[in-house]
Length: 387
Image 1 (cartoon, helix red, strand yellow):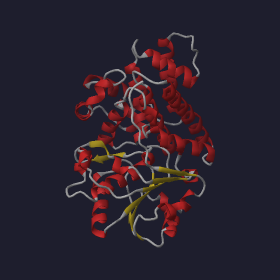
Image 2 (cartoon, helix red, strand yellow):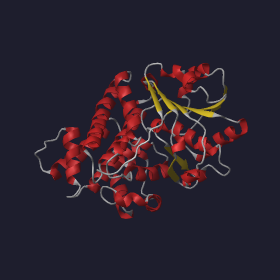
Image 3 (cartoon, rainbow, N blue to C red):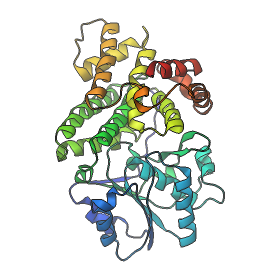
Image 4 (cartoon, one colour):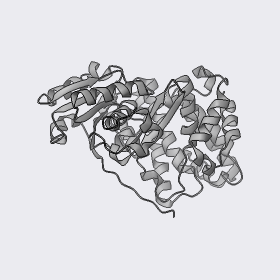
């Protein structure tokens, strides 16, 4: 088993009306709070209003309009508010994009230079404002980790950043808050959770315990996504997906295993940087093609194990046969929840593939340690097969 370390400082507060604990959870955080939201759903469904009522003894400022692929221009606005108004803590109400933005703002509030510097080099993050999350979409897992992803449209870059200082102090999770998420975004969020899990599962060496965790996560996402798409008000299934979101990206699934360089995310981030597509949709396209490209005699046994334990394939069948079937089952699942099967469905052409491949290998040198070592040529092959 591989050496590992795990530190999870965020308190998860899950359940009906969990938001009512905001005053208790933020005691000692300070008077001035910046609430960060996305496109307006938090206001329309009443969550923002309830948060304001519960924090009526605080001085509240707002930053709205965070994009699905959060942009550094929006982060700069948030940092400016923090510095001008003396903000003492942040309350993101939303999904991964909103939470990622709050993390970048929390760090930028104490940085003298441009916030994009912190994305390019996270070692420059020396201090950050406290963050408390109200989660409204099960997807990225940002509510239970210390990292995020920010885009710079001017340079066509979408890059991860992170620091232990950016882990939220607490995340409030009420599955009822996800019931109004449109079917497309519910499915895209599920595809993101699925990819988080699969990319940590499909590595050279697993472990008995975390293999089982990953397999259980994948089965949960498959079952519960189908349930919520059939009945958007299925609170049990919504809650199960929230749990999968939190534990899919917090580091728990990776302990004792070969570290993953997250190849599908590396490729999808390039696609989003150039085309601003929905992250989960891009992953749903790329993942099966990455799996097909990765299938060799060496990797077939693990792919076959995945097929047997997640999709119930015949354990007596040859490994290569089961591996191929597992890939098709994965592709079929994504199609069954309404995800695209080709990049052309998202309006993507091959115009920038060369630049994407160059940028991916530049910023992700560990791709050479992937399930099947991935280089520039492999990235191009996967992108072209995905068209």
